[in-house]
Length: 450
Image (cartoon, rainbow, N blue to C red; front, side):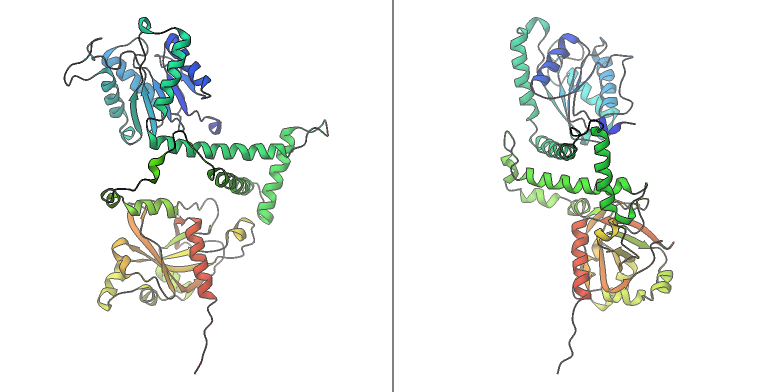
């Protein structure tokens, strides 16, 4: 119910107070909040794994077990605490016995696995998704007889924690980004709270004043579209815009310690050639469509499931659409027709959509083509195509692209016909590019001269 508050980023899993209290104290002195899980048999665990955990300190021996039984129990606890659908997560094995043989408290020889090795093996077997989510390291936990006094160990623990946190440089950069987003959200809330004056009137409360302010922001963004079903969406739109402004301002002076100088290093060309560009394009250029949110959201690409019905309604000729979007030899046209399918793109300005000023749709027709047909999709004159990207929103991930032709424009009522099926949504930057292209094509002046 309150999942928006369930977001710890650090967790300590340890069942012995003489062990977990010092590390909790060390994290506190470093200003790092965390959640503690004992992990003993019968102890409470979260109803669902925490999705925002990024750093986990885990002891290997919980509930007094040893050997493979201990490794299995601890792996099960970690699986119930750490979400396999989030990440990356740094698992720090903090145990007095991490380097011991699974058969007893002795240093293993040769290829004999350690207790830490067995734990990692069992954890990855229990949840295969963890293989692409987790990174492991070990941090020394001295046995009770080998520990320094409490104050000195606190200093050593803080030093070890700091070294551990920065040991995976890429993780640190992503954590910095996540912190920037959280801080921007907190600053939006702080700014709105500071605008609520409750001192001048003893009957005012911060909750009541905030409700009025949020109601005002929502109604101003929504205009005539305000309703119980749309108000929250319009409010989030406003808050997101304020948050992005804060992120962009903070990013200009962002620093890290240590500074990630490796970000500016040149990439090896061999590595770059292995990167799947279509996957990156899919991430950067597309988002899921949400027909439950509203019909004809700007940027949505619709599959035409019945070309004859589209022709009957719009007058578009599929034969001519294929020819207009085609660029290649005449002998290749038939194959182009067979490999492509008709689509429509909604280009209404976002301001009209959010404020409820739209009276109908503003659609332009085109074709979806497989990646191997990209060379035959025209991107000049009245046509414009997208880069090839990975379509992860359709059945069976494929590499595709879209080509649209400005000659095929259509407006229709805001109730979608049954022959249109939302496929995905192009991100705002790409939609803006197509919207500007479409406007330029529509405003071109033709002159007759001699």
